[in-house]
Image (cartoon, rainbow, N blue to C red; front, side, top):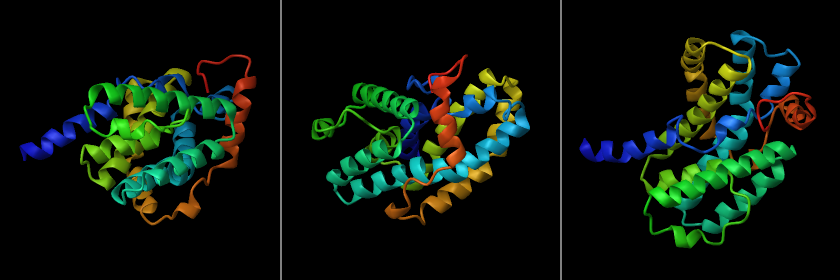
Length: 227
C-alpha cells in the first residue's frame, strides 16, 4: 500500500495546478471564442470544452501521451523523437505551437531538476521543440505510473488548466469552475477508453473551428493570454 502511495505522490505533484509549467498563460484558442462572444457563460464553455476533449485532446495530446508510453515500453526512443517532430508539424497555429513548446520546455527543465532519473543523459539529443504530452509520459513511465493512469492524469491536467483560465477570462465563479471539472469527468473517462483503441495513423485529428480560432488569436485587439 505504501509503495503505491510513494509512486502516486509525484503524480499528484505533476498534476497540481500550482506546478509551474506556464499553462496559466495560454487559452489555446478559447480566448478568441470569448472575444467573439461565442463563449460567454458556463454552458457555452462546457459545450466547447467537451468538443475539445472529444477531438484535439483525444486525437492529439492524449494519443501522443499513450504512444510515447508505448514507445518507451518497446525501448524505442527514436520513435519518441519522431513523434515529437510530427506533433510540431501538426501544430499549424504559430502561437499554439510556441505555447506548447514553452510549456514542454518548462516541464522538461523542472522535471530534470526534481526527479533524479538516470535517463536524462539519454535524452540529450532532444530537439528545440518538446511537446508537453511527451514530457509527461516520459516522467510517468520512469515513475512507474500505469499507462491508463498516466493518460487520464494528463487529460485532467490539461482540462484543469483551461477551466482555471476560463474562470479568469470569461469570467466564471470559482465554484462554477469546480462544477465544470466534475461534469466533464465522464468525458475524460470515455476519452481514455477511446485513446487506447486508436492507432498512430489517427494522430492529429482536430476541430477545424478551434484551429482557426488559434490562428486568429494573435490578431485580437485585447488579449489576456499568450495563445
